[in-house]
Image 1 (cartoon, rainbow, N blue to C red):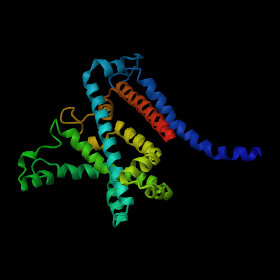
Image 2 (spheres, rainbow, N blue to C red; image 1 turned 30 degrees about the horizontal axis):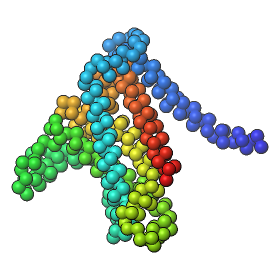
Image 3 (tube, rainbow, N blue to C red; image 1 turned 180 degrees about the vertical axis):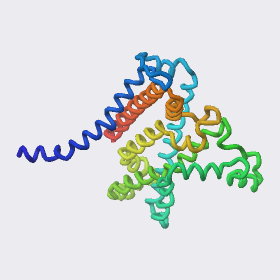
Image 4 (tube, rainbow, N blue to C red; image 1 turned 90 degrees about the vertical axis):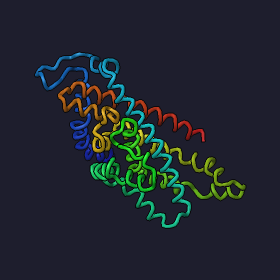
Length: 291
């Protein structure tokens, strides 16, 4: 009996050790270094307390721009991916012809690397020779043609649109799985009672999808808060700081040799992710219990 109890631990010890060495230990070291002035210009690391965090939150307003951009990106892309993913999932589950083909096409951007997507969309959004502006000019809408990735106003919305296009397929798959898990008995009973499409949607579909929506929301938000790849490839944070987010600031701080400040930014991002995710999970789980 004792041997059976110890059996699972025998195989998990190695994974626990590796996880501790490569994940837990570096994380705690990063938190410690966030309270120091560790940099590439000195061999001495001095403990400076909360100075790095004061610089981020109070001292230099540019970091507040990075934080604001991060939250704007997260909120907009999370809502867009969730809404579009849900709408597409409902359409594909409810008898659209060649549904499997459409699923494959919509999901396919998810498997592409950010480098490929960045190169493709930088070409499509080129102000002079890009497909988007050429199409607008061809149909007589020249006034809408612009430098999509070089405009202070449109750079961030353009990046958010590309990210939404790439990520909505994954959210669609989550919602399709959730929709297929809803028993047909509920819909049959609602039809007998004379409930229309929207009545069934708001009384059955959406309440039953709350667990799936919780997962999708948390995934979208955690990705949005730690976004880096798509911004780095498309705009590298420009023009100016129009598309800079927390992770591009982390990259910049480490690249310039300010490792303590970069660690503080990473730690702050981690705290934000934990707090926001906890709040969302707790709130949506309460709504799921009410239903």
